Image 1: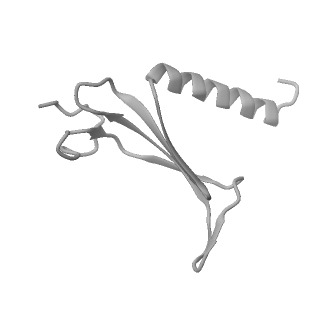
Image 2: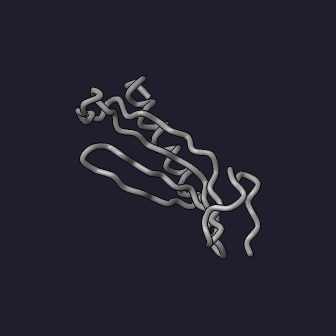
Image 3: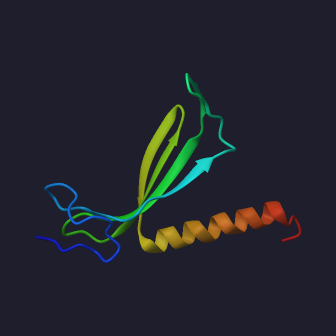
Amino acid sequence: MSRCEAWCAGDDYGEDHTCVGDFAELELTAQPGEVSDDGVILGRLCVANRRRPNSAPLVGIGIEAAPYSADLVLTSAEARRLAAILVECAEKIDNPLF
């Protein structure tokens, strides 16, 4: 049986004992929303650590933006590279002389 990671938000996630960390959620305000009876539902991006038994820990990203949804998994190195790319792109928007 696998042991939980220090960041695991629960003590058991299913029969396979997958560890999942706390979710960080981001509303996607630049993405067109979906109209429902309750109003406009914005897309969202959810990020959490996860590890399946006998596997390396990964960063999971779930994207829900109507009409699409997708799940990605990244290694820690890939997650850091993506974060650096996102910061660089944001800096170019905020400071065109960057």
